[in-house]
Every structure is written in structure tokens, then in C-alpha cells.
Length: 237
Ligand code: URA
Image 1 (cartoon, rainbow, N blue to C red):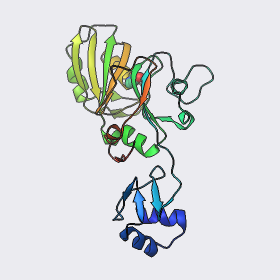
Image 2 (cartoon, rainbow, N blue to C red; image 1 turned 120 degrees about the vertical axis):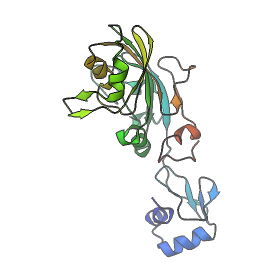
Image 3 (spheres, rainbow, N blue to C red; image 1 turned 180 degrees about the vertical axis):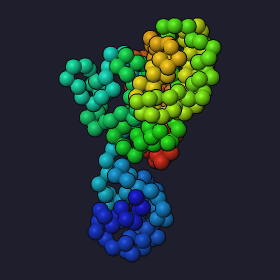
């Protein structure tokens, strides 16, 4: 939202007056005087007008090393969810920016900022997701070509976008996909007559799972990491 509209909404002051205040340097956004109106703001932005702070939510962005056995959900009656691993007062506000199957491990991103999770997960954004995959059968020589061409998913009546397969061993590969469809990796291997036996996500876009985070451990993302995704704010933490 534009800064002037945001201030008008929260203070009831007419837009003309707000514009005058901005020009006069009486509006501070994230600790800096806002001299122009183009500054995009939302409910997570710290804005003050003539020294008075407007209401602002704390944004939380989390990188979690998901262990096997945890559900990518915010609540479930049967299985423990990944949320239970996040020991933070705002944990109850978090949602997932992309899921992993219960048995899958690796990088999971969580946030309470819906705009940011959209930028991470919307298929049109083309964010790369890189997986280490182990398979039951030997990975055939044709798999890389087929994945690059795209695999037809009859259920959705669509063909997956080009994916990159790097074969690391007879039954081990690194796969990069640029969408995130339901059980996508498993279904792609199934389509070439194979079965995934282990799946670990190494990275999402420019965010690589920290080697120092063991299974179940998490940390907050820094401002530069948050800003890696388009449409995200750069002025955090
Ligand atoms: N694709 C899958 O099949 N499973 C995952 O957990 C992630 C991607």
C-alpha cells in the first residue's frame, strides 16, 4: 500500500495533509525519514507520524530443518506438526511457505507474512527448489531428458516445467524444479518407472539450508534473506 493511504487509513488525516507531512519530514518509516510517497508499506512496517507510532505487527520469517515424521501443517490430530518445533511467541501466527511430505526432510520456510509466502510459492514466480533424491531403482539414462521436457500429470492435465536432474550415483540424484505441485518429485520419478525412497530439500531460491541446523532446529531469517524473494521487504531485522 502507498504510504499516504496507509497513514490516512490509520489516522483519519486527509491525504493532502499527509502529503504535506511527508514532504516536511514528519513521517518516519523503519527509522528513516520518508521524503516520498512511493515507499510500499504494510501492516509489518514501522511508521510514525510526528513522533507517534502507528500500530505495527512483528514479522517473523523462519528457516527450519524439517525432520522426518513431522507434518507440514499448522495443526493435526494424529501427527506432530512442524509448528510444534518453533519455540517462539509468534509461532501460532506462522504458516508454511511451501510444504514437504511427512517423510521428507530439509528446508522449510515459515512466516506470518502472507505477501512474502506468496512470493516464495506462487508457481508463476519460478522459484527454484533443489532436492536430494534417493530412489529404489537405478536412475535410467532417459530420466534427465524426460524431466527437462516436462512430465504430464493427468490428474491436473498439465505438463511440468523444465526440471534439472543431476545424477550423483546409481540411485541418487539432485533435482531442481521451478514449481511446487502436489508430491511433484515423487510423481516425476514414478512417471519414469522409479520410486523415491528419500527426499531432502537443500534450497529454495537463494536460501540454502544452514549446515549448522540439525534436524528439528530453526533460526530466524535476516533482512537480506527475506529480501531475496520478489515483492518482499528489505527493511527488516
Ligand atoms: N515433492 C514431493 O514429492 N515431496 C515433497 O516433500 C516435496 C516435493
